[in-house]
Length: 396
Image (cartoon, rainbow, N blue to C red; front, side):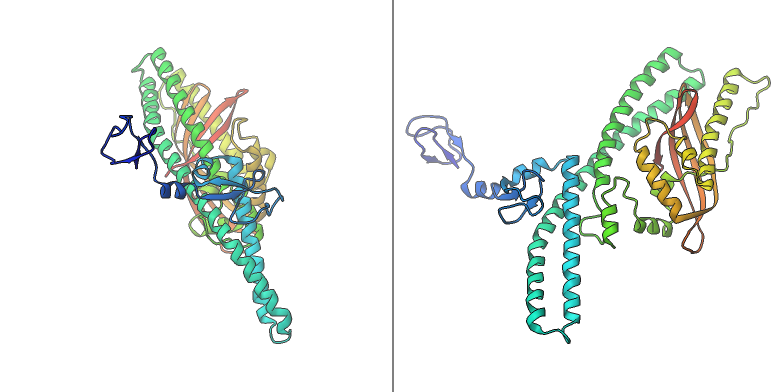
């Protein structure tokens, strides 16, 4: 509605000035809409956990505070610590609901030999507790799903931004390799493009990390409390996911952690006499190949020190990779590991490699061997004269 700030008289929405005093009219939000937008939710100021009702936090006992819906939305976006708290609360509620449902089922099964005076009050109590938990559980699921969609959208946007920049860098590398541009022009362009690529990748890395904190799609099935707790790990590698990956051909997550190889050198130096630059590139290619040989040997021998020595200090999540690698070795046996080097580009102390991994594996507990393959883009950097893996990306 439109009112005069001095006379406080309501006017027609098409009018601009007060008929009585001539003041400029102001637009005021409708009271019903204001009430709807200021609907409050209860939140713990310490844990940042949402509550549907009550005065005190179920988790820490702190006095709950009211917060508007608009504030709740603004606080959502990609706060890593807050997301982790919500996920923990979601999983805790899930386990509580499971426990209550299990108790109710067992009480009903014991109905024949236990008196109704004992069983019925318990069933009613557990049912009331379930009804109290469900709205809060759904509310947190809604919050997490909203964060998932927004984070995924940000990642997709950044990946679309990254592709043309990477393509431009590859084009300049190709031109420089053919001596079609001067070294000064190439280095200047490379420096600017790398700067832009690193900026985009840092942003994408932040969003991917937040996405990795979330459990499976909200409301999805989780098979055990142990599995539920496993979802809190950033890597999100749990036994159920591993079995699923085996069924569909051992997808990206499995291969990202377990590269294996029988080295294949796609290029042979043929010029006679050999060009010094070509010779140097072949030498570096041999050194890079040895990195993947060590990865293969480490997996076959289950040598964690050799495996981790292949990764750069700048590799994201080295400790997580160590733990996940040891866990995989406890679960699977490797029968055959190999790789096929598709292409590589070496510029100074950086190298980009595309290779295809092939593996034959089976569960240690017994089972039929499975074959799988995947293609990865690997970025390496030279540290103290030795090539190390800096980043691994799947090729879609």
